[in-house]
Image (tube, rainbow, N blue to C red; front, side, top):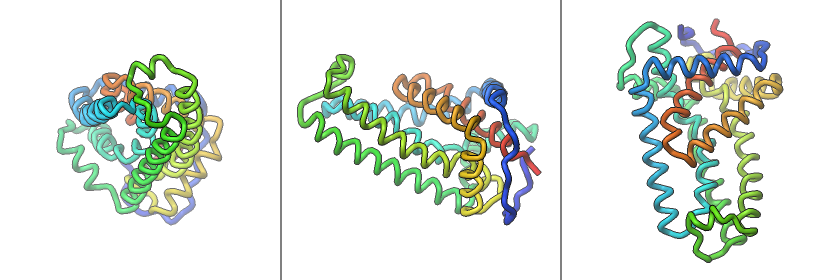
Length: 254
């Protein structure tokens, strides 16, 4: 059941959660995916198709190693996509039959603070891709590098992957701490922009032993699925629904 819509001015305190809550959240995410596979796959297919197009362009331009950075960068814009999945999940929790229009309604219902966080996600993604491109230019240069070179994984490519992964991990952690719980809190009207971000950071550092394993699992699943795009059709909705379930456990509804 969706919490009542009201902006909270009270400092939100995260509940005690355990590692077992991650398994419960993933199970819940899988069950919700099975309850509406058609809509979930259709929504995810939009991003899988866009990813396939971008990878094809990078291969055509002979700069395929950037595709690894692009796959990692998906974690930075992921939070901006959640409103559609949240709306579908709300319909299920309310006992209604979800329809395609619910996805659009989710974005219409997202308060301004949620759009601000989404804009920050997009901005960091652009910064990340720009930095990865600069690093690629310094470490690999103008030499053509197509998919076959990625599979060969020579020394220059290995260094590029290592250093670009370190840069991406730092940005991803910052963004995860800011957005992991602020987006659902703002979406549900339980916090405004500032209090939502504060509550998210508080939850990440206050429940570090549970939240960080979840973040690492989320990163591995989504990045792997972005590289092997057909997996994204299932993993994206499952992890989105699971993240909402975990959010309800960290910040239980009033």
